Length: 528
Image (cartoon, rainbow, N blue to C red; front, top):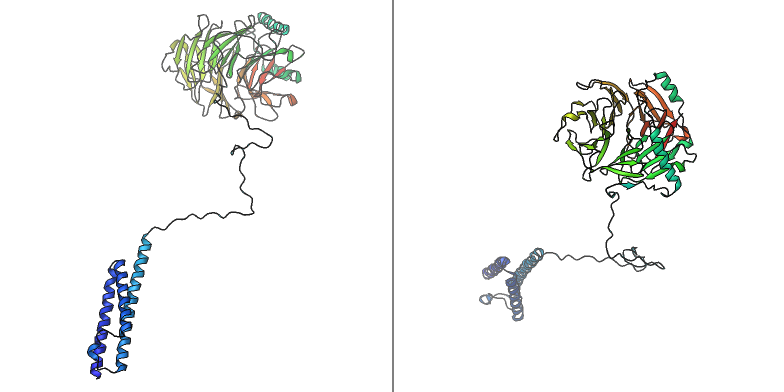
């Protein structure tokens, strides 16, 4: 009996193992087969429970009830473990399928504030009219931006003062006085130079007061000229705005002696009275025009015009002021003859400089002229100029930064003074131009004027050609004079009358009168 029961138990265990092995094989099948198999197993289990029979027990009908119950429990446990294993494999497959599917991205909606205040929004951007004020109408067509500095029309321009009525009798008398004074002006170039002691004494007697300070032009002053008259004190100033201001200091009222004209549309960088006829004042501008103001006819006559190029400086080649040399910002040089009809050049030369700031003619040997470029100073001979890449006779390469100006001494031309941005004034010996021009003196001087001030330009005193005049950045404000040896000769202080920097200065050719212009349009005059 015991052998029979052990045989039955082994048979049931074998059947349960077969079921367990079959369940392991079903793990690699699809989900649908697994589900169907699990359903079949459940149905078979229900059927077995209803019949209360266990497959494979018919041959052991001779077993006791205890043994039959034990074999039934073993069979039920085997079926339970098989169904549990199948359900676990099905759940594992479902999890793998879910992992392969991309998760749904759902944006969280912000919670609404029930009792809070909303975000502030611009009523202008929402195009909502404010209470009581209507919005301006939208323009239907775009507005065109006009040119800030339009070119003036070609040809002569009438002398029409911008600060007064041109039909007034005062203006007519003003022009008449300028024309008459020009006729009586005298030249005194043959006078011997005074010694340095008497020169210092005369400089010490020059003073400034409220009557000799006045705003003449609108904007910064780029050029100043003193009329060579021995009778009256007449000052001309060229401004950044293109204006030319004339001031007669002999009038009791300052306002009555100032007249402002607009012959140019851009800065007037160069201004000279004609050496042949002081009734003419020639002005050059960045706008590519060079004009001659004739006081006797009350017009600004056009001498030279080139709308494609911008001019920087000019000088007289001949003593009769009939021929001119003009420097361009792009490095070109023009030779202009006023006696020929038209407003064009006679000859255009391409120099070896990329830019030209100033040009100046030798006072004695007028075939030579000097140019100041970016870093170099060149001396040319007009007899050997070529249209393409003209080479200079001499080059001064001692400068380390940008150069502002270079000028010959006014009487003999034996000296050259240059102003450089490296805070140095240099004086060269130009007594022998055919060879080298050696450096004589280097003067330490602050030339860093910055962006808003006109650059300094050291110029010679026409009465004392061994002394140069230059503005100063020192406090209190002043205008300084240096000897060619580097020693300081004199400083002009003005107290409350001189509280700004006079960048551009000039001296009267025969009288002790100094005129300086600042960057706001004011003229300061020191005189005996």
